[in-house]
Image (cartoon, rainbow, N blue to C red; front, top):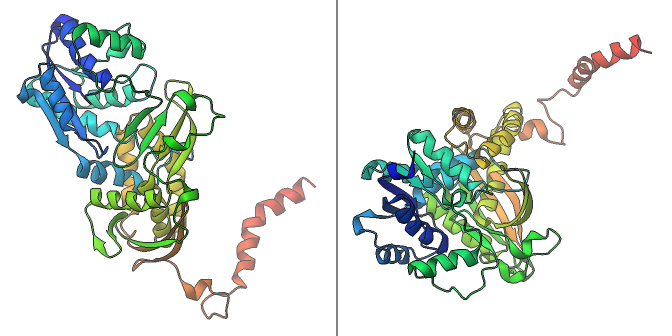
Length: 404
């Protein structure tokens, strides 16, 4: 679609430097009416300044959307992902990746509501987010025009962006302050990239971490908590029933206090290069450990093993932006089928960056003390193991005789 064809565009807007410039650039380059959308995913920032700034930049009040999506984010995106135990490349709990499909979904809902023929985002042409946003947009409406300014304009540095802002009278707060890291935050995590971290041998600066206490400085006394699960989702913490967002918020508080959830990762980006990122996922780290614990006594052996085989594929689909794909939905249906009996309690000990499982119980437990005891039992005939071993070794016996 040509630039002159765009009449109205919904911009994913944070109120920061990049998206404030994009707002003005869209009006100049496309001559279109701009609608701003700001998602509250629990990033811990005051969002009303985004409204004030949009108004200052000439956006009509009815064209400014600031939506609280925290409950939907945890209930419909984070919890399903954690039911799968999804971890990308063995370390990354996908905190940024899982937020993008929801932002894209709501942005497209607003586009339909206001009759927009285009959507825009501030992701660069070098990262993963452009893919995640745009696959989301096109899964809802393949006819929508997608505008990605970083792939169109010739501005490629903070200096050039500030010069554009000065030229067009765009107010930029705290412009003199150093911005050492590129950060993204939501209720599940906060990420850090760039600058000092670009050398993978550099240890992260202690002052970089914003949420969690340094494990060295965490309390010297461990703290115990108990999480109760229903069909694979946590719903009670220390006996108190909580909403999904409240559950994650409270677990974040515990994790932050005890220095839990820090990660320093070099990951393989979708666009081809390796990138180093640091993450704080305090509540998510606790949930991941607890969910594995309750599954350990409620899932059948082969069911659990097959689920673990599917997990890397599922995690990669989220990382690469395929949340709305038929294959992700198919895997989700299979995963959710395994969660029918994932009910019960997990007791955890939190201590200096560690989450230690110290107990688990379930009304649907498959654990049988009568079978697994090291004391005398009346239900397991140990002589049966001989035939089992002989049958499983038969192919080795035959091959050994033939190829002796």
